[in-house]
Length: 64
Image (cartoon, rainbow, N blue to C red; front, side, top):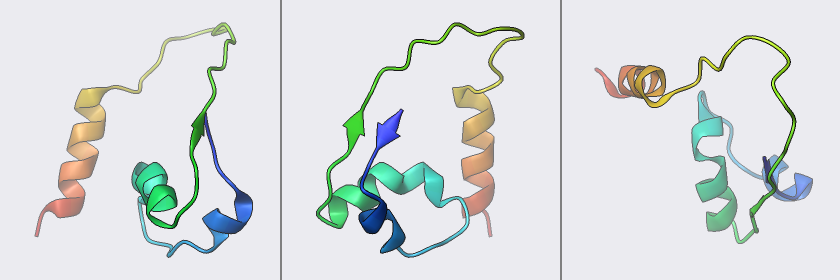
């Protein structure tokens, strides 16, 4: 989990899919990003988050 100050977050420009760039935007704005490990066992199912499905989503943003 990434943590950053609310004031810094609210000062950022808003655009679609901005969550992908939040750490870089926070650092660029002079803020700090802290990564905190969250240890919670998955109760059911399996993760559907991965490089391949994220890659397709990112490439659709760049296509003209």
